[in-house]
Amino acid sequence: MTDQKRVVIVPCSGIGKTYGSVSREAAYDVTQDLRAETTQLVPLSLLVLGDAQARAAVADTQAITIDGCKLACATKMVKDSGGTVAKDYAVLDVYRRYKQFKPQGIAELNEGGQQLAHALAREIAQEVDALNGGQHG
Amino acid sequence: MPEFLEVAVDKFKFRVATDRFYTREGLWALAEGYQVHIGLSDFLQQRSGDIAFAEIKPVGTKLAVGDEVAAIETIKVNIALSSPIDGKVIEVNPEMDTAPEAINQDPYGAGWLAVIAASAWETDRAQLLDPQAYFVVMKAEAEEEAKKL
Image 1 (tube, rainbow over the protein chains, first blue to last red):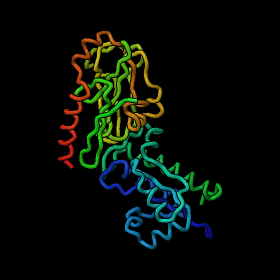
Image 2: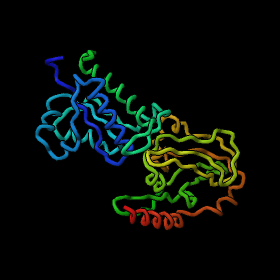
Image 3: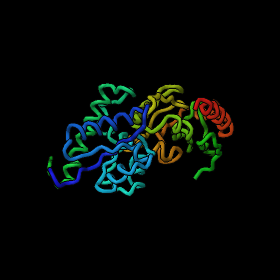
Image 4: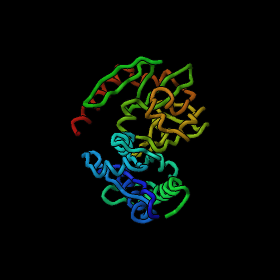
């Protein structure tokens, strides 16, 4: 992929929260492994701080947000930054689809949390492909 | 539509519906004859957090006061909920399978858990708190929780 803009992934920044950790693990999985060539991670904290580069990144392309709780900070900040949210994921809703992966832990997720993050990452990767016209990479 | 007692503690607002009875733990019981709807109080659902799953004992289950009637898994905790009355489960809210977040969104309405056919409602009701009494208990707990923030 050369000319296509990268899909921006913005996870929850909830430090010290299990569901926030799941969102970030999923984002790393997508942007560093599953779809490294077609996605870009933008930290929510930079958007909150008004970082010009981060704001430009979300304003310039489609974003997928991953929220750890119903406050939905990632989704709200992308919209407030002038971005377009193509798809927003809530970790709790994802967990309801994968009840067997019970997330626990904060600094280090348990096995269930890791598996939930991977499951979420796979869903996001498919969404990225759909946004790119069904193409992978 | 019930009326409510309300209190604001820190940044949170808690409501107690005035048309039903409560356990000290925060389950409510609303009787229509001897059929009693049960559910979580606003304070209990807010303190417990966003609900991921709610498993209610199936229709036909016989319960004594204190028996587990439901298990709730939230983003914070797993809690076992004790039946406020003696009786038999005759209906389970179907929303609990597909949309347990109804408990968070509408704890006194769409978020009801089950209907129990009470076997000793008059006796059991006497052991429950009226709304004013529960409001006092709830407010004290909420203020205690706020000190930990």
